Image 1 (cartoon, helix red, strand yellow):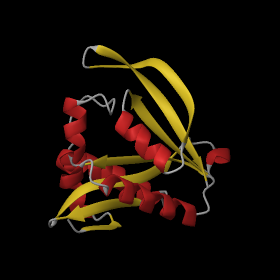
Image 2 (tube, rainbow, N blue to C red):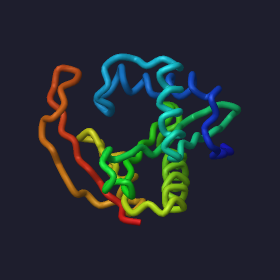
Image 3 (cartoon, rainbow, N blue to C red):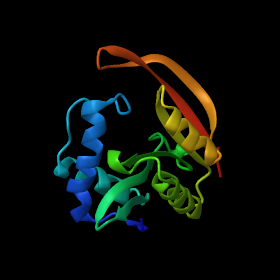
Image 4 (tube, rainbow, N blue to C red):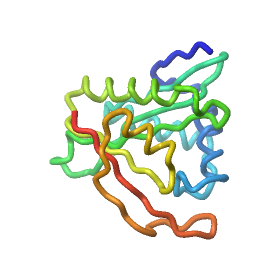
Amino acid sequence: MEVSIRPVEENDAACLARIYNHYVSGTCITFETDPVSAGDMLQRVSESMRASLPWLVAQASGGVVGYAYASKWKGRCAYRFSVESTVYLDANHTGNGIGLRLYAALITAIRAMSMHAVIGGIALPNEQSIRLHERLGFKKVAHFEQVGFKQDRWVDVGYWQLLL
């Protein structure tokens, strides 16, 4: 399958929402509990763009099959060289290397901005996401127990960090 990675466009918002809403409604991977609209997703894209942070999409078979973006880690000025990274794939396109390529492209874009640290949060357990982060050089730096409650259970969150 041929996959291309490109910057997000406004008309991608509905695809992004579709991909994300699978994880909202069926998993504990995100702590969001209500589906998001294309408008909500467009607002999130715009927020990243206003902060001059990258948002990329993976495209295959004529459609968007995944996305990755950077967001501010914290609001205080001293955090300005650190970002949080996020990646989501269409559930039908996991396990075939798209996430690795997409995430690597995001890290390259973040590095080009002279950022210092990339932080990825993972709802646990999630071995697939842990393997992805560690394959890209991230190291586990934190583990918070039972900080989220979704799907009738408590969920831990771990943080992985990549120093650029």
